[in-house]
Length: 311
Length: 247
Ligand SMILES: Nc1ncnc2c1ncn2[C@@H]1O[C@H](COP(=O)(O)OP(=O)(O)OP(=O)(O)O)[C@@H](O)[C@H]1O
Ligand SMILES: [Mg+2]
Image (cartoon, rainbow over all chains, first blue to last red; front, side, top):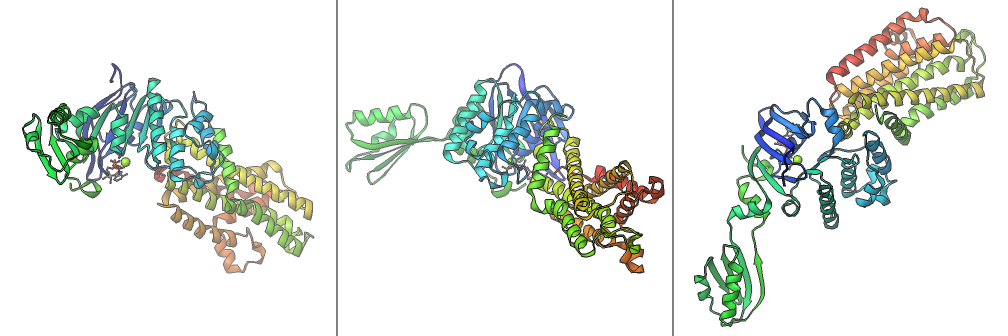
């Protein structure tokens, strides 16, 4: 739901490392109050992009505006108003959890109370633990708490749920939604397509430093035009042939008792189930397999193998 | 400067939680003091210019503490904070980059001072340490020595690519400085060849300066030492300003 004043605007952003064009001319806007996700293979340029927005790295070309500020010139003000969780960072080994929160809170003009953050991120029992003694997921939660300690207008989360268990991941999603409910903007990257699909209003797919797609998860999936599969178990004498002529059906396969009907369209399931019912056929265990964002990701970034593919 | 003093306070706690650093600043100088103090006592001796062993060694041990905070603690903390990504995380906050570095200077200074005060107090209480100098001059000399060795520590952290390299560089410089400067072994017993080398060891100038100020020499009598230390300070700051990287 982009609003009139974008939280982030980037125009032809480019950043090279030596001869490698890590980000190669990308442009997009993120609206205030949006949860915006960026996905792409390893080495696609996500961290480079997000760190150019944070003012942690400086682009070679293009225009970047974050909360109306230029990260290069107004870095100080930007850091005051944004929260940042970096993909790679650390705290001193012997720093305790509460000390880190208390310290980071003291850097800001208007810090949030940090005790509730400890509870919210379920590390309250670790408040006296030293950083080096935390598990990977606990460190991750602490970094997310630190990103929120100034109650930021815009929060950048680079791989926010990497290392979190499934419960923690879901409670992180709730937390992100709660942040958005309060009118804040969230910019995140993830390798979990399920997460991008459930959480993000819009998803940008990046590969080799270029935008491959940018839309809502639902539109991205629809754009893929891939087939829906209906699977069920039929009685031994079931004849699948009549199903082939139904509207939207592309293929029907029968393998012993198992039947698979593949096709397209939002009405496919209704049509197939009605036809089975009208023919008096008895079936069990009916389920559908629908394309999801993961299929979109795999289709759009197909030629990339390991480590970002060939260039 | 919001958060600066809190950072300095947290850094002090972190310093004291690292056993090695605390050992070299607080414990090791005291061990030497008690070891040699109990062997030689502190009776005036013509060999030490009619002063006692403890009178001469205490300012030398101060130099030793300065050498260890500068060449070891400073270089290692800064470079390992960079390597692990701690400096990166600090840089993503409104805290000014200079404040991160300044907090290291303050903390190392306070810890050196603390180690020094502890040493002087024990030498006085246990061995009847004598002091003939002007406290303000000693404090000035001490501060200049700290700043120039901290600048060298920063220089090491700036030129070393990894924390390991900084650690090794620090050690390679620390031990000759420790043994050839008169900071641990009294210069009076050095053979002539070692005495000659000793002139080129930076910490020698700290030892000479502090020992001189301790017995009441005016600052003007130590212009050479002051010039060498000021030169090191300028060199360290200039190189660090050019070569220092945040990640
Ligand atoms: N500091 C750097 N120096 C040199 N090359 C770099 C640097 N940072 C990133 N790169 C290169 O730029 C490309 C993009 O890296 P980036 O970290 O932006 O990818 P990413 O999309 O975040 O990947 P991942 O999903 O693995 O985190 C990669 O090929 C990487 O090797
Ligand atoms: Mg990344």
